[in-house]
Amino acid sequence: RKEVEQDPGPFNVPEGATVAFNCTYSNSASQSFFWYRQDCRKEPKLLMSVYSSGNEDGRFTAQLNRASQYISLLIRDSKLSDSATYLCVVNSNSGGYQKVTFGIGTKLQVIP
Amino acid sequence: DTAVSQTPKYLVTQMGNDKSIKCEQNLGHDTMYWYKQDSKKFLKIMFSYNNKELIINETVPNRFSPKSPDKAHLNLHINSLELGDSAVYFCASSQDRSKSSYEQYFGPGTRLTVT
Image (cartoon, rainbow over all chains, first blue to last red; front, side, top):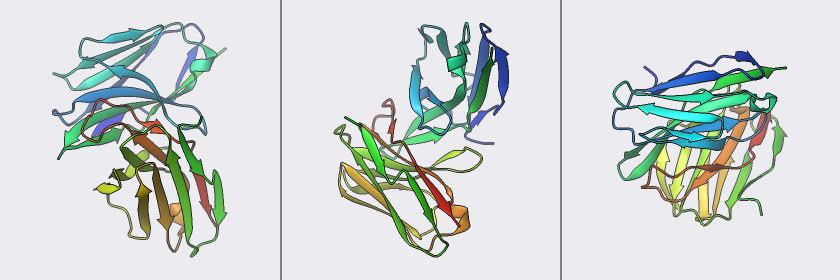
């Protein structure tokens, strides 16, 4: 089993739709969780951290389910500019340093 | 005011050559990383340095040698380049090696093509 698993997609959705991505992780000792966004031919950038109680930033909602070891990202009212690859990132503290594991990413294409 | 910068942005070279990629961060971060993103877009960590000390060395051929002259710089030297080395290489930094809650800041990437 991969350490961090995501459906690579692509997810093709019309503008205005709501779309959700899930990500599962295998290390139950994982401590921090993030969603990064990567545009085509660009570097990954932090979209949002994922907190235990769930958190929202505008149209984006992230949730964490530690019992089932998955995190989710919900995008409401999709915009064309949301088209990108969304990377799930799981951090753990291993031997005193931060171990960072990226998922393969889920590609989202928002269609006019 | 670029936070993490890499040079060059594009690198085209022939098999067997030796090349270097440079990375600098002006964020005052302690930890820097090199990642490789292959044609399937999978982002995989190669190395991590904390205050010039190597702390992560994933299974990477020893043709790849990172060097950190100071905590703001982490360079990657590649010997005897092979076709399979073609990829985008990202440098990144984060604040503290021991805090798993800190985000990483990525450089713009170096697109390496080996012919």
